[in-house]
Image (cartoon, rainbow, N blue to C red; front, side, top):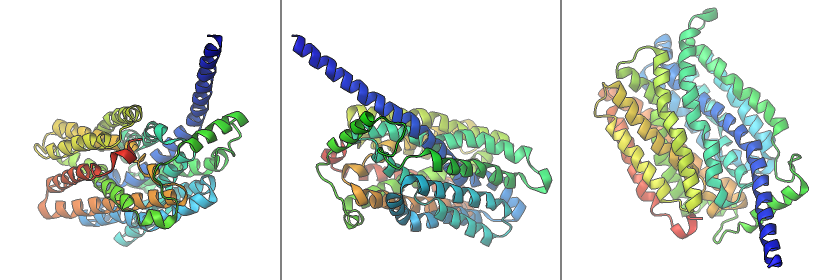
Length: 436
């Protein structure tokens, strides 16, 4: 009996050691990446609020804005895979620092734009600079956590996405109002300048703060390093691809890219156009618009964590994507019913944002269920690249449709339909592979 008791005590002690090691890793790197993602996404989408002043100040049309906002994704797509391969070879510390510093400088330089061509060039370069950040972090997290722990961790990292809008909406609205005319610059110019500063500072901090691997983490003991490495070694993939070509030619990678494409089209349609939609519903003050556009993201934070935790606990992935994506589609479609009602508009977009955002921590667990090594670096980046086409399509198509129909409703319904297609594609994934 005492032998059995000793075995139970030893098992409990081992579990506690594992949990303590992962807790230390999580608190060290995940909040930092969450802040980085917040800064990145804020620099990417603040053009949506800047638009409220920028178009009148520069004489840009809706189509010019839509094309410029969308060109970001062309640069992003072209350099996503190469950037992630460089990160895998060079290490996350230097490469993520490079990404953050350059995107911050380029985003800040947008305050100096005076012509459509300058706007197009800087938005394209911003995409080039930021390429590799998101898939790089996704890849980096696989260096630390086994498959069954990743959905919750992805959710914690991805909190930066709704937080960027939750914090950025009111902050950006306030900057537009409070800084208008200061030192002769418009509020929209100060918006680009001030919100670029955190990205540059975090990029510099990355050089001293971020370890490239478990073995390079000076804040872990030798025993903790051995525990973490053993857990990763035990996380064997039943069916995996390792080579670069295997990732690029995998039908499953392209299927994941198509699913992510449908999700991201809706995300960017909301991110870039919600301020305009709220203004058309009857709100004129930029501070109030910023506050109202933040509301949907408060619900998204809760949905993000709950869905990620539930997916890990049940070890189920497909329906944890399908159900919230369907809810997102319902929210988007319903928002078009009463476009002049502010409360209805914000409520339906809150439902849509929560549903769509909740899919991402679960979705980004899927590539590593069948990709390892260079294949994981290339495959994750390729999926993100395909999805970035959704960013370009959402901004340009919605801008074109709005200018043609004088309404955002047609575009919103189109992207709600895309979410339903994404639901169908998700159910094509083999559950015996992805439910891990």
